[in-house]
Length: 249
Image (cartoon, rainbow, N blue to C red; front, side, top):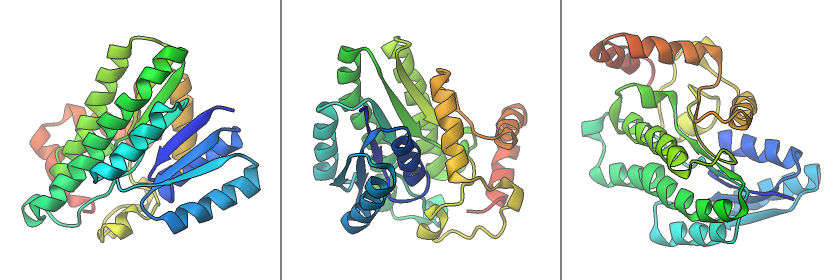
C-alpha cells in the first residue's frame, strides 16, 4: 500500500484528502495539533475503509513539531499533502507580529522543510507527489495570508522545475472559499461572501487529484475560480486588491 502524510488532517480540506486517499487504499499518517481529534478521525477511517492509519500529533509552528514530522517523512511516503494553515481576523497592522511570524512558520517554513524532507526518498524510488495547499488569495494582494500563499505557489512551481522528473510531481492547490472550520477558527465574518463562491471540500480534493494525475503544477478547482483568477490577472492590481478586500475578511 502507498502511504500519504497529511498535515492539518482533522477537518476541512485535510480531512477530505484523508477520506479520498483512504478510499484509494492509501495508508495514512495524519498530522495535527489535537491528538484526541486525530485519534477519533483515525478510528473512523480504519473502520470505514480498512486502511492503516498512523497519528502524529505536532504543532508545525514549533521546532519540535516540525522535526518530528520531518523524521517521519524521511522514513518514506508516496504522497505528502501540506495542508496545515490558518488565517487572522484582523488587518495587517492590527495583528501582533508574533502571530504573523507563526503564520509564516506554518505556511512557509513548514511547507519548505517538509517538502525537502519528502523529496529525496521520492527521487530514490523514482515516484511520488507533493500537494501544497495554497489559495486563490495567492493571486491577489490581501495581507500576509495572501503573501504567504503566493510564496507557496511560487515555491511549488520552482520545486517541480528543480526536480525535473515527470514521475515526481509537486503541485500547489489553490481553492477559493471552502466550507470548512477555517473561517470560524479565525473568527472571520463571512457574511459578505456570496453563496455561489462557496466550494465543497470533497469536490475540491477530487479535482485536485485529477490535476495532480495530469501533471499540473498549479490547480485552481472550479470554473468560477479559474475565471476569477484569469480576470484578476488582467485588471489593475490596486483595483483587484480593493475588490478582494470587500469580500469577507
